[in-house]
Length: 323
Image 1 (tube, helix red, strand yellow):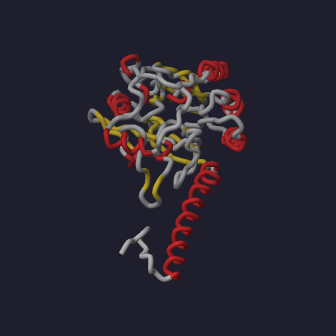
Image 2 (spheres, rainbow, N blue to C red; image 1 turned 45 degrees about the vertical axis):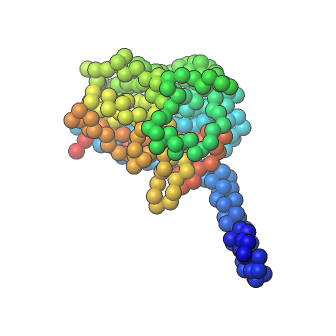
Image 3 (cartoon, one colour; image 1 turned 90 degrees about the horizontal axis):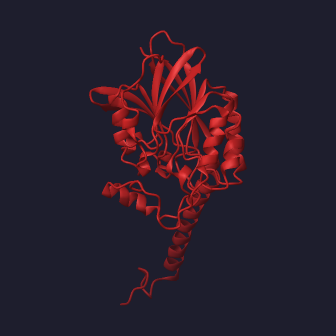
């Protein structure tokens, strides 16, 4: 007997109808999930609040706002309004961990959206999407890269169809506002009489990080120091931790972006383990331990504008004295 689609040709009409209903139901559920992930959750902006005991004894708490992975596309008004509203938190300082762009036309809107936050002391690093425009990719490649242990662009820009974003304009806007550029260099912020040492790296995802240029750990004269990097690759985390930085801030992972409820992220888009894909954790290297905070970010690549079980976010970290 010949069978098509698993149903014998003599099957009762009721069975055929049931099969069609199940198929339609599955299709409808899938469509509803995609609609939710793109239409609601990807625009359901949240603020994460975290307390991190990393300051020397006797210091007053510091409040740092971390924004990351904005991936601005021209016309994203709700995202722009939400970013502007974050200034109402009145943080002591702001750290931007990169990937501000997903559209070469988005620079003015990034600067406008972050304008109120640039009234506060701040610092920044860039990610690969600040330098290069995104490309359409098969999402399955992220799983294949995880399985093969290969990530990033091996230090080179995409050779075919690459879009060079006007990152210099973005840099000049941040610099003009007084934010500290931490591209493979050190910087200092003075906040409420406290001297904060900052050490940053360019993006390890495209192998632009040059830790040798900033090696040596926290410098004398700083009340507190932290490390800043876009993509939390293990080599960068190891270097910061071995050098004695008590706190490292990073982004890049999007928190996994498409997560499974009650399970979590499938990929991190780097060599960090999925258990630390977002939020606060610790990292150990060379007998030392650092706190690590990875932001899930507040945007997506313009070609995959969906999030599931991983809403977009910024984080207000309250730094407190160590016990």
